[in-house]
Image: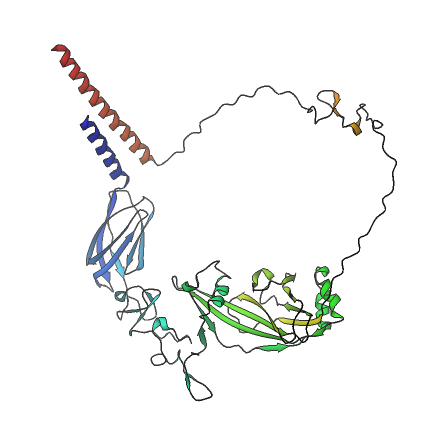
Length: 459
C-alpha cells in the first residue's frame, strides 16, 4: 500500500513539473558595444521574476505562460520583450544596452555614461556630478541643487534690510502646505497621498483688478439660454452696488515622485471685500470657451458655485457678510496658462429674504355624490363595486378576490448541463495522463492483491 502512495505523489509531482516547465534563455550581453560585466539582469515572465548578475553571457531558466510576454531589464531599464515560446524550449537571445546620458532617467549608477545616478531611490537622473542642475527655475533639493552649485535654479534674493533670504528660489517655489497640495492632487487623483507628489508653484503672475457694471451683468444674465437660472440675481441688481474683483492666476506643476509623470494646472482665485455688515455678495465668472468650453472642465475648491450656463458661466453667493471681510473663490483649469481672460462680476446688496409664494386655493367644483351600483358597463359589471369583465372566464369579477387568468398546469423543467468550455488542449492531455496513471496504479495494486490471494488458495 505504501508503494501506491509513493506512485501517487510521484505522479502529482510530475504533473506539477509539466504545468510549469521552464524555458531556458541564454546569450551574450553587450554594453555600449562591449562585453557587459557586472550587469544586473532581471527577467520577468507572467509567472515569475529572476534577477542575476551577469559577466559577459547569461543562462536563465524561467517558467511562463506560452504566448505571454517575457521582459528583460538591464540595470532597471527595459531593453526588450519576447513572446514566451513552447515550454522546455532553449532560446538563444543576445541583449544590447546603451548607457544613458546626463539628464536621462536612471535607477543605477552603472546605467549612466558618467557613472552617477542622482536621486536613484525615487526618480533618478544621470549626471557627471553628485547633483544635477536641470535649469528649470526650481531649486530642487532631491537633485542636490543649491545656491552654490546651481545658481540658475537657486537664485539668492536679498531682502530690503540687506539680509540674505533663501526662501524664494528662481521662478518656482515648492509647496509644502499639505492642504494646498491635497486640494490640487484631488483634482485628478482621489485620495492621493501628498507625500507621493511634489507640487511646485510656477512663475509669478501679477494680480489684476476689475469692476464690472451692474448693467453689464444684467445683460449677461438676460442672455442665458435658461433665463430662470439668473432670475433671483437679476431681481437683486436694482438695489446692488458693484464690487471690485481681484483675480489671481497661479500655475502649478504636480509631479508624481514614483512615476515621474508631471501634471500641469492653472488655479484662478477671485476675491472681493464686503463693504457693509449683513449683505449678500454675488460673484459671477464668465469663462471664455478658449479657456474651457464646458463647466465640467473646471475644478472647484471650497465653495461649489451654481452653474448658470455650461459655456461656462458660474455664480457664487455669500450671505450675511461682515464689513471688511474678504471672500475668496477658486477654480482650476487643466494646462499651464499665463492668463485667464475671464470676465468677473461682483455685486453687493442688502440681504434679500425670498418670500414664499402664497398658497393658491382653488375652489373645486362640487359634484353630485355618485351612487354605488349606478355605473354598470356594457357587460353589466358594476365598476364602483370593484367589478370588471374577465374575458377569459366570461364573467364579472373583482381581481383582488379572483384573478382573471387561466389555470395553469404543472410546469416541468429540464436542467441541461452546459457543455464545458473548451480549454487549452494541453490541460486536457495532462488530465488524461493523470487518469491513466491512477488507473495503472489501481490495476497494479489489485493485480498484486489477486496474485497474493491465488497463492494463498493454492497453499
